[in-house]
Length: 546
Image (cartoon, rainbow, N blue to C red; front, side):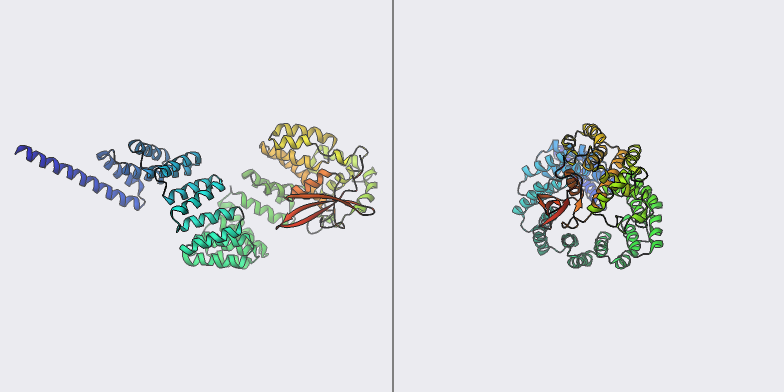
């Protein structure tokens, strides 16, 4: 009888303990769902003391740690759960997500692959795998993972959406539209319409883009992200009044994105006081934001206040040297700061120059009383390469071609480009500087020199040599548009043709030499919007000369 009573007592105690544990878990679940993660951890931990081999409790504890950014305890807890039970794929999935969050995509991939091995027919695991590939910019692998997920769930709107996103990134617009439409067939979501709007936007189908972003807003409401997308489309259409009307409700509190559009739109509407109001307010609230220094520099640049634009572009570079546009604008500001504006048209280019003009200027290069006397320009350049005005860069560049020692075919050194392409930046700098001693107007060499210093983190010297590069590039481009023989750009060496091509970010698609009775031209071919285009260079200043 005593044994029976003891057994009943033991059973009652066990059941009571189980009930207490279940009660703790229920309360912890409620706290977790309410995002009260720290309190949830305490209750889950108490429950885990009573059930130390319960890996579901350990998973929940790790999840809560992860959501309060306590990464190490989260990982340690999951590894403890995996040690107890290696066959629960959900622990590997969460571990993969945590590693992905920390940027350790290799560890993230290892763990999601383990989950897939345990449960290979689970579509969502392939979506998570593909998302990791997306983050690590392995787009082909990401696409394969998303497509594999459809084998196990052909109705997955998320998979279709993500496939569409990958195609949009690589500019396969037709495929992107196909898959986003499939996603929308299964589920109407604001993000799906937003992506469709972005695809249309990339195709310059702005009316369709507005239609889709309006659908997104109709589904989800005026989410700031969607409003900003709409503002971007209006801005692209130069509908700046519509931009202001759209974003005005969001300007009561500081927001980088909304203030950016306010500044740009007010400036484009000629409402400079309002533009400066938001710009100054933005800089007060966000003094480490490079974008606003860039905007302040840009407004000054357009207003021909090149000193102020130069200062602000330098400030933007200091905060964010990864944006090469800042260097371009700083260098051009420096050149124009030195330049007499009466020599320029409204596009900050010379009014008009052609080959006859340049040949007639030969007397200016030779006259000791001339501002453009070549030895005088060379001396000024050697003292400070950034001190030249745009007209002086022009005269120095073309004046160099009239020197007895000049040879257009020897105006570049393949060793310099080889060193740069092989990432031997210090070697490239040494080779470039040696070469420039004899060939001070080698445009392409300044490009490699400036970019080598950039790769080594010396941004001051990057600006010096980029300024020279842009000075020569602008000089060449001032001679013509390059769309015909009549307005061909004039160059002094073959390497400068490639420099201009590179500057305009064009893909080389062939070359042809042609002539008429008195002139020689190089035609460079390239593709724009799948249409073969031509760029003309007049090469009379060097062609046939040693």
